[in-house]
Length: 290
Length: 208
Image (cartoon, rainbow over all chains, first blue to last red; front, side):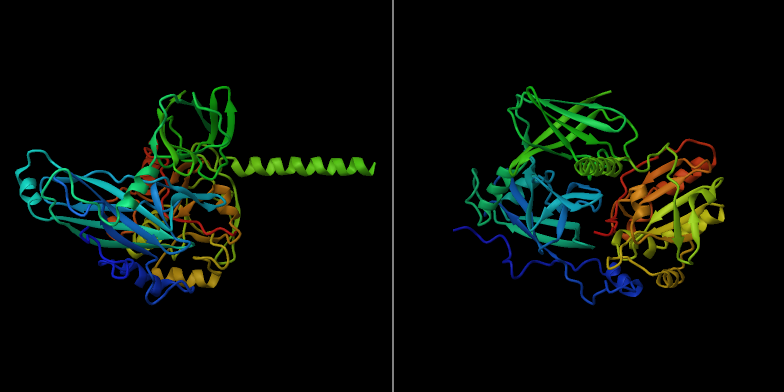
């Protein structure tokens, strides 16, 4: 039977209310009706694990955000406004957490301010790895593996509310390799992994050119498609709100991207995702010819 | 004839729409270009024109008093400090409120004036831009979003207030303030080392 490694939804672990200092200041200074005596957080976060017990070498954990309808958090490139959530992991000596694996984001907002992020529910997962030949880690692996996460985030709808949370999880020792059985979250981890951006197909030849106002991204060696959308990995390179003109070419497609007002230096590489549809996001790094 | 007029009208409308589309995607305020001139009304009912300040450095600061990224700068007193420091060195500091009526940060002139007193803020003027036209002219994205115009009327900075994109008041100390750095450099005849950055903050609450 899978061990319970997470708190039930009705009783989330300690989730701090939005930064009280700011909330209080808002009450003091705001003359409009924005201030509320106990502002709701609009985001609940759980720290969850893929497996019911920590394996000897690697373990997937994740921050599961439950967002109120209409509210969002941000992708690693937040776009025009907002900032991505940040996590500081606390792990025993000999363990380290890898970077967050960001799922495919959606475009948010309207008009001249466009952001990239997530609505409803999103799992931000990271791989915890045990250093090989670590005596300290070996000692821990015989007992439970404690995982801590300090999370800072900003959740927005019309307005933005900063929040932070300290979350903990204790993974029972697996006592064996290969790892123990799945937790009740395994299906969600599987599903999220399947939807993560993937390396671009090997047949794709990706390149870019720049003119005064545009970056033109070109993919050759791709089967005919009808539309594509580019999500830049770096901030302030393209004008997020500008239309991305799509054109089919003989052996692929082209996207004309407007440069950001903040882009004044040439960039050697244009990095980001080319999204062809839900679950079809591809990581690209296009050298930019000058 | 009537048919011809109809056709002409239709093509004129299409052409006008095309112009609108082109305008809407034109880059608004690019560093190194002439800063777009504007006329706006401040919170004292006075008309403010950018061209009136030829010969001076002008800072534009987009603000929204309800936004946590803005509050970080005002709770810490940092924005007030910057306003005081630079206006006493002859810089014109124009704070801009582009929140639409009914949206977060919208203020009437008297509300803004009492707020300035309350938080001890001393910009040269606060421009009220409830229809968002000044915001769109500069393509202001966030609060805060900072612009600097040099005495020749050229935009020399477009971006963030500093290099710590957070809402934490504690991050003000130790941050590299891009506005002060750019003004210091420009005033001593040096090129601005960081002339653009991603502005960080809440979205400007433009009318729908």
